[in-house]
Image 1 (spheres, rainbow, N blue to C red):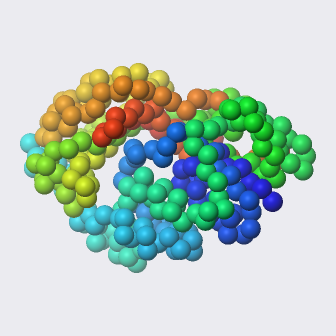
Image 2: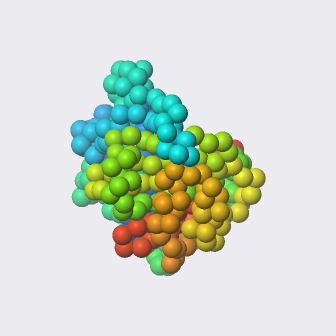
Image 3: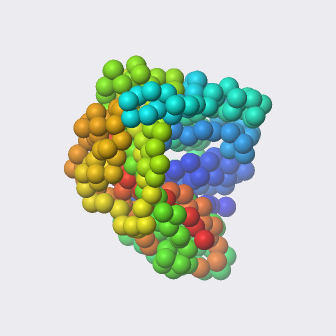
Length: 299
């Protein structure tokens, strides 16, 4: 049995590992030319934690995870206004909790794959033909794959879902938020926020900081907006939305990298499963990356 999985994110890689374990021939297609470096810190617990244990990757995730003492809320002058100790949170999960960067989680999943699983980067699909007992998939290079199962794990703007079920406007609902994330180097800020997740104590828009083990500072920001359209200039949009928050925010925004390249996964019936995740606009430089996403929910 052959499975073709569109999307080499968390869902796609996890499914590839499990199908391979049950003897399937697995091909993973990923539109990006290389594994994406950008991503957020993920609090990993519950069903995902249990699944990682069953899959045998939990020790590796613990190695890659971060020890965070507290989520701290800071005012515009850098004074702590409140916080949540992670030890209390961990107690509620019986200690089955870890915090990990999304790229590290994906990396651990890739490491866990056997050499039987094929990942084809820089590849997507343009046409799907349901033949009843099989699926024929035309790839962007013109080649055709025959498969017993096609899985769309290619993001909230899933090409697979668009080709099989129709335009995404039928399936997505804007939740009223945009998010942004980037990393930068600043030893002084890193010292202030390391081993904590520091958030601005603000309403309608918020920015958070955490220190990474390589010395960089990771930033996550979110704000309310009814606008469904993502900005073409991510850096300018982030400065406009968050520039008045005070504390470390102006200094961080000054180091948000410019977007030399801005791309989006495009919006695009049967033996297809839709495992869509989150889509984003992204730009990358060799050392830094910045991206902005809409928060949407599949219907």
